[in-house]
Image (cartoon, rainbow, N blue to C red; front, top):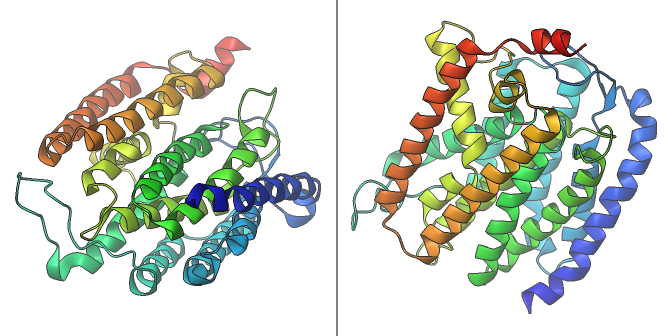
Length: 354
């Protein structure tokens, strides 16, 4: 029944996002929302960074038509705020401190008024013992929320990558929400997922070039939805999945972000410094094309999503799933450090191919 009532809102979200993109791409220069090539960018043309605006327009149009729409006002307000911060960053370049303050504020608002507060990590460390957060629930919630937002932003480096990986997570969580009869979360995930799918038609590297980018507004909005849904679905006595499942659902962006920050800090660099050390950069520096890199990371994203679902359905002990996640993270970090020291820079790769 929930799926039948979601069909029209999701269809509206897809259509509104697609129409909005057709219009916004034309007006991007006037809006000063063109992503210009730069030293840490992988594209060579000015590309409209309007995907976030279109996704929010489509998603909120669909959510407004769903039966749960009236109860999602707080989330809609936060999404508007995140979009505004991201668009301002795209236009003027905001300071990292201001961006972090906005993300912290969003986390606090959703935790206080939208039920997105982490109370425990499940049986993460030991079977039969719930890792309750108690007095540190609020700061841990903020830390995790901000981490997901920045992981989404940092993986947004080549056409179609961030949107595709987020779409996998949204689809998997929508299935969990449906199994759990969680209609409000399903409505959000269905509409945001449909809008993201429409955006990917303008962004995925199957075409000759991307017609639109997410922009910082888009990555912040999608990261916000992922973080909100993960917390809502992984907490409480009727949770849809264990908290450790969330790590596997978004494993590629999370592991890559932690590895990059770790390497930057170990080399005494600013964690906010832009470079070519993300997984997509390393693969392209190793000689793969952007399309091949996208395809390879899509397979990785599908694999980790499948692991998340299988672990939940097979009731694999949460502590074992967490240990496997840590093993995968350390293995990737070792590979990334080795690759970063051995492969040429992107500039050298481009010169060799010129």
